[in-house]
Amino acid sequence: MAAAMFRRGVELKSFFRSSWFHSSAVLQQSGPPQQRFFAPAEGVMLPAGSFKDRVAFITGGGTGLGKAMTTTLSQLGAQCVIASRKLDVLQQTADEISTQTGNKVHAVQCDVRDPHAVANCVDQMETLTGLPDVIINNAAGNFVCPSERLSPNAWKSITDIVLNGTAFITLELGKRLIQQQKGASFLAITTIYAESGSGFVVPSASAKAGVEALYKSLAAEWGRYGHRFNIIQPGPIRTKGAFSRLDPTGVFEKSMIGRIPTGRLGKPGEIANLAAYMSSDYATWMSGAVIRFDGGEYVSMAGEFNELKRVTPEQWKMMEAMIRGTKGS
Image 1 (cartoon, rainbow, N blue to C red):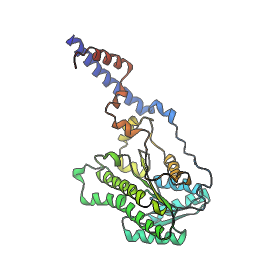
Image 2: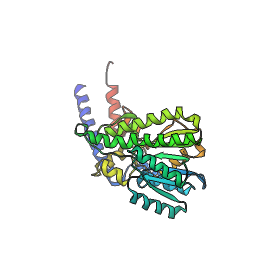
Image 3: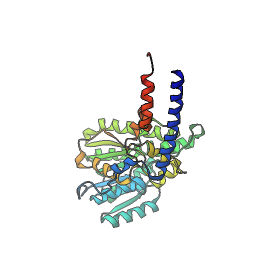
Image 4: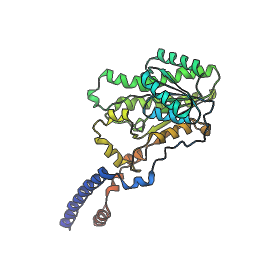
């Protein structure tokens, strides 16, 4: 009996290894088969004119997810103001989106790490458009690094952009909006590991967790002024800037897809639609919410036994026989 059990164990390990290599090869060639059930729809979701006569302010709006969200809001009628440090990139994006949608997009240079620069940026925006109805704190910085190799400057560069930058923008705009008795929707883009923490991106995880605490706190405190605060935690969405710093060799993308139950990465247009909804009049009862938007990646990684999805029917038969053959507790 013991010899048979041992042989079954050896065979099971062999099955696991062969199944792992086979599934990895298939993944590299074509991606998981279930992705056909989860095809992305990136067309604009909300009715035309949903943001007519509204002003939207988006930090980091010149590239990546910020650009996607700006495009969608502009298509829906918003007059958008985008801000970041690189004015040339901003202006190019502003011109491109304005031409595409027919709605003016303004480019305002701003280093969110500097509270004086933030105040100047808001001054410019007030002159151009008035104070915004929608604020999306999207500007971020991140890179992978073993924590024992982090310098104080590396820590500060990320936390200054992500946490301090979000706080400076939010507080400057919030105080002016309160003074003018104007309501607004605030939205922050964080990450799924703001909730769990993550090695190798410790400054980002810490700063994003701080952003979430800031927004949940202000949702409770500033609702009386007509302000609501919500958070999106995206999973992996391919953008040139983010992936060049977080997956420079391209090695991790395949493993990411392998652990996402929907079998694919997210698309910028998908998060743009979610951001537009959460910032719209269709979501005025939503405040203090944290929306995880990751194809199921977080819960897939969290479950203790979720890796058993790799077990084949043949392996289950062998395991069931081993379990039935086990005596005692």
